[in-house]
Image 1 (cartoon, rainbow, N blue to C red):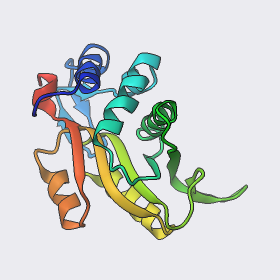
Image 2 (cartoon, one colour; image 1 turned 90 degrees about the vertical axis):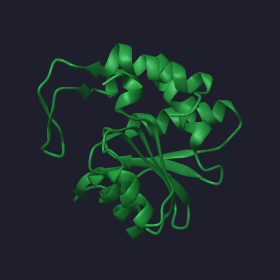
Image 3 (cartoon, one colour; image 1 turned 135 degrees about the vertical axis):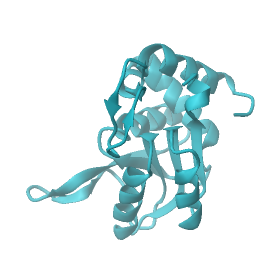
Image 4 (cartoon, rainbow, N blue to C red; image 1 turned 135 degrees about the horizontal axis):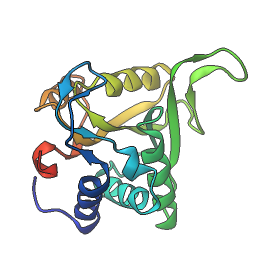
Length: 184
């Protein structure tokens, strides 16, 4: 990766110190087995870590975006942290979440949060191996009439496959880190 900005480097160090596990094997969401695992929530659910996530995301996010979010659990703390940090800097961003399946009660549906048809959004993920969660979230968001302007992952372990998938669907894609950045 190129030279880090201060928040990005601090985030990398936080991930390595608090979220990286090398005592595998671990089975990933994709079904692949790995000797290392990034439990990103050990950073994204931490006050300091969440602040660093928000700062680092704002450094790479499309400046025209009005909201950000993705599949629930992985993307939720990233989206909320980024919206909060943006607010502190005078930028209004909204966070949203994509449920794993339709909710059949209350207001229902898969998309949750203060977004409206036509909003320009960034879809985020904590760690991606195949791009499945990003692609699913993008499909749901587009089906609700939101305009996806970028996809961002904290860590991409796909060896370029997710970048190719996003490029072929016409989306700019940014990964803050890859395995080499984490020393694995």
